Image 1: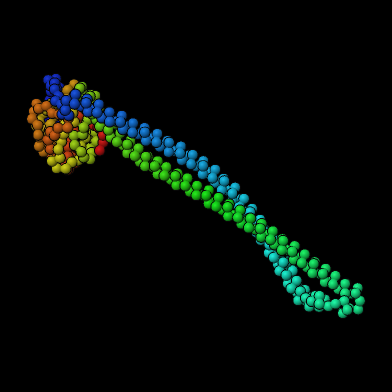
Image 2: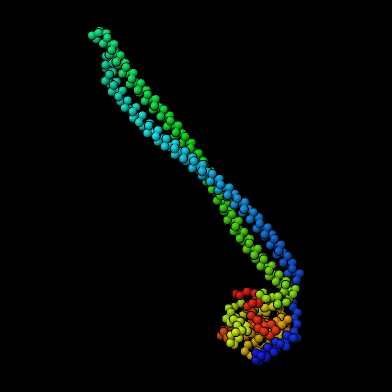
Length: 371
């Protein structure tokens, strides 16, 4: 049969055939109920998502508060460290002063020891001596007075250095006590900072978990939305069964790689698409319709032509086997045959055409997606 004769067959068929469609996905009421159930599920999932978003915002606010507290604590630590540095510098100066005083005190101590060692015998002699041992009373008095003055001055000097030494020791102890208190205070502040950082880490972990959960929640919502979209499409198809409204939503006749593209400018023109498939791969009806041709067609092998009403036809060629009969009504997605050898691609595959009132139409603009 020539291609012109094949076109003539389609022309006659378009005038005589009217389609009636059966429901392949349950009744309209069942699909409508499914849509409502899924919409309810979406509302519930969105509520959970909103609650998660609120919790996330709360956690972010808590982290902001913690960050502000940490900034204040860091300022406090910086101030305390400056004070502590000043105290330590003062301690260092006092230590130097203390060493000088201690050194002078030790020097005085040695001087006193030398004096006592040298003058003690004189003092004892003077103490035990009587006025008769001296030439006159005046000499005795002078010596005694001289010894008393020397001992008094040395003792006074020793007391002065002892006093300064005690004062420095007290000051040193006071500074060391202040340093100890400051260090403890700094430790408490740093502990508070560490506690805040740990708390912040907990909130960050909580936010990360919530965001992961939100992501999964959003994915679930998208999945449900896809299902609702599919059900809406099925509902639309079941209620209207209008092929023209199915543009961009038709099922693919088979899953495979496109080897030949639609191109009317090509010589000879390419009026359909060629899909490479495995041997005996199932071929499905892209839409509801009625089988108007189920036979061999020269140049196309075994061919099934389905009329979808209002001038729309789909053609499935190079089949190894047909699983439908002439005049049979088929549902969308129903297996109508198995693919056979496709000479043009030198492999197994399917040649698929879409026509409107005898004119070839690019199937890729009508099929649901490109795989």
